[in-house]
Amino acid sequence: MSAVEIEVKFRVEDVAALQERLSGLGFSCITPRTFERNMLYDTPDRRLRSQHSILRIRLYGERWVLTHKCVPENDDPEARHKRRVETETEIADGEALGSVFERLGYEPAFAYEKWRTEYADATGHCVIDETPIGVFAELEGPEEWIDRRAQELGLEPSVLLTKSYGRLFDDWRRETGSTAAHLTFAAVGSEALA
Image (cartoon, rainbow, N blue to C red; front, side):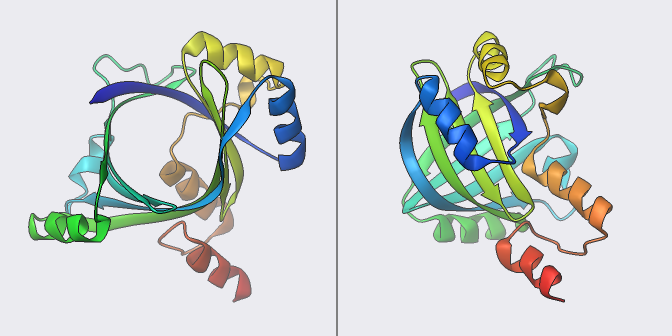
């Protein structure tokens, strides 16, 4: 089933302080800190990326999830919130499905990892993602809810991000001169050790 996902990201400097603020705003932890590994598949000419579309297999704890995301019709690239049409389903074996994708002409294009902790209130979610390039949080829900919660968290509109982790990783590589090809703890960490 497809749904329109609406979200913003922001950098987190103090995870404990954010967790305390979320608790004070009535959020509950619905998934404790869990490791997540994502693989994006694309054609060799990166057709999906050029269309702002992704085909992803995610291993989240013990769960495999297949996701397709694309930009909705009449998308405003200057909008304050990121909007994507998201179709998602649980699958039994992500590695087997990845093999099927490869036989169909898709290839593993980009891997990214994070440790995710999920919080929710009655309307939306706030997740805290510990990535190899820093800690980010996402507010996901209706636009009015996102704006209200961002204000309650003391976030200025200028710190809210609509970029994907792939785009944030591209920015980080430009800023640091990194040659890492994937946003994984091993790839980014090995450069720090070099």
